Length: 114
Image (tube, rainbow, N blue to C red; front, top):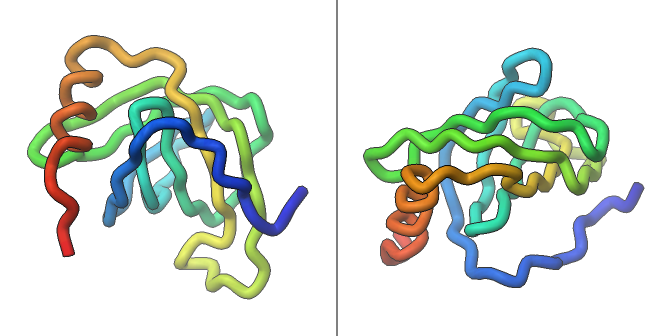
């Protein structure tokens, strides 16, 4: 496993500041780093196996965003504090219903905050 994640996104993404919840068997709190129409990058205090599926829940703007995800990439970052999340986890959205798609589109169109 590599210490960094190669940039592979083909769509625009937005930086997100805040925590969200991901359920992959057991619910875990993770830090959402950025999000795009096809997936998200998170920091987590634990590693999950590539291919595992679960549900990601977070708030985007004033709306609740819930989507089924699949772990596509994971890399440990040595030297990171446990509370900050020493694992970078990349997920792809597996199913995005129309309501959550609109929520994400609205969020991604907002101007970036300083």
